[in-house]
Image (cartoon, rainbow, N blue to C red; front, side):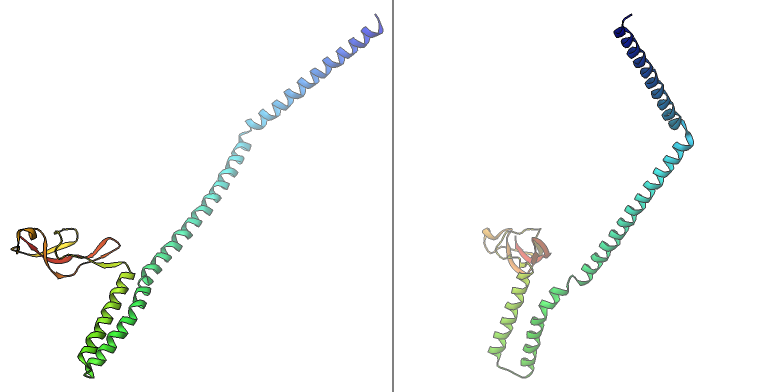
Length: 190
């Protein structure tokens, strides 16, 4: 045999030995992994640790939600409690004007100036209502509408065109943001 053949045989033998060693190492590693995976105590410990972690996460989320719920409930109570504060503050100048008018009446002031003062107070109050989106319902001469009108009585219509229409408004109705605040009390032509 030549030197080349011997070298090739040696190399082949070494390669075969390495392959056998690699296979043994792989088998040993697989056995260790399967032993670790088959160890029920270790699996139970891992699962218990994972469960404990999930419980902690759940408790954190639950407490955060409870804090959020309490905070929003408190804010809601504060809004309801103080919601009319701005509306009442804006009404105070109207009350002041009415007090001045009553004072002028008690002192026996001029009736024309008193009427003018009351008109100014009325206009100021109507402007305030409009700023709060409260509008009077225009009823007289309109078709009777049960959504915004409340019929107080039926009255014979003065002419046939007024049948089913509002002849007179006894008490004005009001709407706020397209919602009826108070129905208009009306007399309907029959």
